[in-house]
Length: 614
Image 1 (cartoon, rainbow, N blue to C red):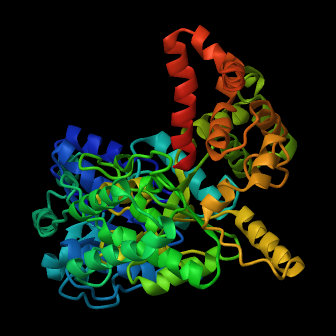
Image 2 (cartoon, helix red, strand yellow):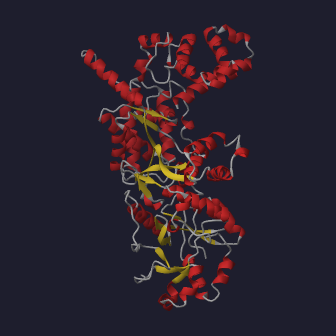
Image 3 (tube, rainbow, N blue to C red):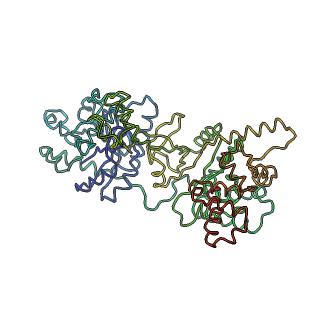
């Protein structure tokens, strides 16, 4: 019965969370429900995932609108239809000057519903219908459209639960239009009658038109959408060379090639670790994940870009051999199972840091190299104080009053006038609502299927397709992100090396991936020990320099331990001071109770090491 429902992911229009819609529908005995957010599919996958919990059959679609004015609704009859809708929406909204046409493009496995007031001048196609609201029932009897009764369905928009929701909606529309509430156009907002209601109430209003009720139910019954959220497996690109067997052979070959560089004289521990990791990676089907990360870093090396591989992937000797990371897990006793194991449900994680100068080229290469690629969105939400300022402008308050409300909202509410109290109340109501879609700091998904199979996309300012959903939804469906991040310090390292090369032309080329060389450098050790680390990322603060001198740090493990115990909680509790004393005077360990030694000294050392390396 309800084919046009809006959640608050109808950005700056809707007012209800997707799960609240399902909860309301269950209480009213509704068995089938279509989510059709306005020019948006952010909530679509979550809606499908949550619907079975409320014994509701989900239907997905999109409400295509221009500036709040409805042009048409398209519902997906199946997953292919949803992909067609996503592709269509992505193409229409790919530019800043996007415009929704009056007539929808013919798409496979979809159904189009035009509002009664919009479709009076062109002939309906086989998959197109006319939607009639309760307001147009009386007009329908005298309209030519009634002659083709089989092509008419009930179109009751559902956007609000009550009057307060409608008021919130009007405020959102005024914020979106950047106008005073009193000047908000009627065409840019919904109607107070667009309420979530009972099916029986709608049916009573259409008693004289039983065929419309029948058509609406028939249309919804033709639609079926499904995604597997129970047996989650990676939906990332499955193969690197279009053949899993060839992929595994390539991975083993790359390990063999990297072995002499990392371990000139490998022992049994190293060889057994390689064999063990390859076995787990193969069984967990993460071969392409490693090869894609290798491809990205290999391209970076070919271009002379500096990078750092972080994340739990630093626990992997395979990543170390492939030069994805520069952390030796054997030397540091890091467990591969923390990265991938047979029971781990969360996805593996590589964070690749590049210089701010090089990162754009890396992202551009990823998009060119892998076909089904997109950036991940983030939901930028309304925050309390920012909402106060937005609402103050909508109500026409002068700046000094808005500042006063913003500063004293929590302490002086009793002294505010009625309008100011309205601003505060609705700011609280808007807090946490999605405001607009942003872009994740570095998250990229590389899918086996086209991205539009799961979501519509919008174009970032740099021209990259970006999903409508966030990282959490991506993981729910099995799309695990690749993190391509930026670190300014890498650019400074490159500058420093170029200066060294210019001033000392006889010095051999510096290999920044040869970490073992830096660890054994006596001059570096001496500089650490006396705290002369100005300009060194992460350890140049006054507090850190003082700590390095107190600990007399002259090796990598000591550096990692120092970065772990400098935390505020550790420092305030006195544990940092105790660790310094035990590090400098080991005889104190004998005097301390055994559990102190275990919990404080060893915990800070080893757990801190794991945290910093990963």
